[in-house]
Every structure is written in structure tokens, then in C-alpha cells.
Image (cartoon, rainbow, N blue to C red; front, side, top):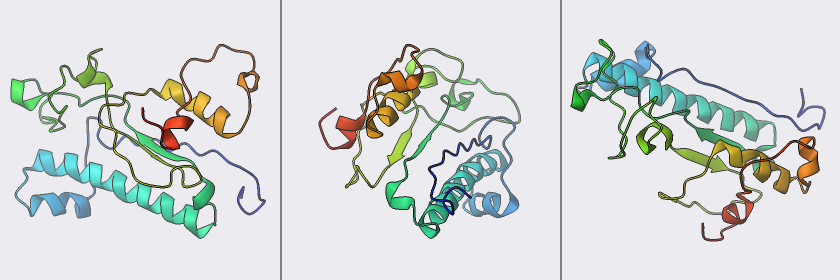
Length: 177
């Protein structure tokens, strides 16, 4: 309705898919079972793939409505993997196969394995080429200052409340992090 009326909009989509209990739809689950993954892994990775497909549908909708080139789209997780099957931690039958890439800790830990997660930003109006910044920690606290900066507003747009975080706009435009 917003695009039909020419109005800006915000949409927040939150997925539960890889939180315990995770259960992939049969189609996605079978893709992993047929490749030799066990049932738990097939459900976990099938759930991740479901999220990927859902984000693809959102991107297709934005294109179909003619707003993809000026829409901010970001994706992140809320925390690291739940449990660690390699160290014996687990919530049977959900031995979460998620990995922390060697970072210490897991979900519920204040260490990097519990807090450092993937982040993806697509905003064609500013981001003109793909970049991968594996060691550039940001926070969701940086989202508000970035969007305020993109909109050309000042911090008073936040209602006079203190604003944590830093605008990522210079980095998104290509400046080194």
C-alpha cells in the first residue's frame, strides 16, 4: 500500500527459523538429507536456506514494486549459535551445528562467539559494489545514526533522546572501515 501511494515505509521481518526448536519445511529438509546430513543438521541448514529463500522473495517484491534501487535492506542474526556439538554442549535432539568460526563463546555468552554475527546490507543508492569486511564489527546501535545520516537529518530527529552508535554511511560509500 505504501509503494502504491508513493509513501516511504519500514518493514521489519523477524525469523525464528534457526532458534530451538528448528524444523525445516519438508522441501528444504530433504535437500540436506539427500546430501547425507543427519536429521538435525538437515533441519538446521534447511531452516537457514528457508530464510535465504524468504529474503529472495522480499527482494523480488521490492523490484516488482519499483523500489529496490532506493530501499535499505539489511539482514543480521540476534546472537551466535545456541549450543556447541563439538564440546559436548547440546539440547537434545537439537545439537545446533552453527559455527562461530573459532570465536569464543556461544549464544548467551557476552564473548564474540555469542555476539558477533553476520550482517548484510543492500542499499543500491549508496552501495555500488560488493564488499566483504570480515573484521569490521558494527552493532544494531549503528543503524539509527546511519539511517538518520542517509535521510539528511540531524540527531534531533531521534526525539532528543541520546543516540548511541556511529553512522556507517562513510563506510557504505566505500571509505575504509
